[in-house]
Amino acid sequence: MMDNIKKMHLSLRSKNILSIDEARIQIVNAIQLYLNNVNKNEKVRPYLASYPFTPKNIEIILFIFREDEGELAVGRLAVVSNYREKVRYEVVKSKYHNEMVLEESFEEAKRIVEAEGALIF
Image 1: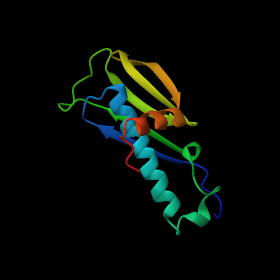
Image 2: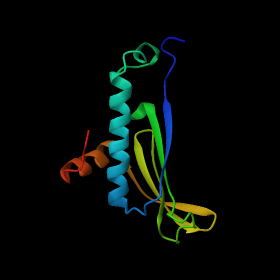
Image 3: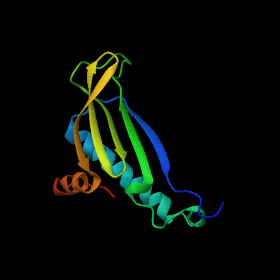
């Protein structure tokens, strides 16, 4: 089992309607918090395939729902994800389909969040 963890996945849920800028702040800070906790955990470290873990080693998906659990309106941000160091933003296109409207590298998203003074970790 040593050196066996290559990737970690985490799904999150937000009941708050978010803009792309707000979602960027949420996902970048979630990634940074997750990485900080994984990398400082000495009990987990021997099981990591690579150390330190970086954004390429984790996948986070943030699903956005309305407070009343109803459907999001067409055009609203529905999903934000980090996959292969790319942050993707998807909006509701129809009742059963989302459409990716923006993709940026994690580093670019992080630079934007840092420039706004919103990076927590």
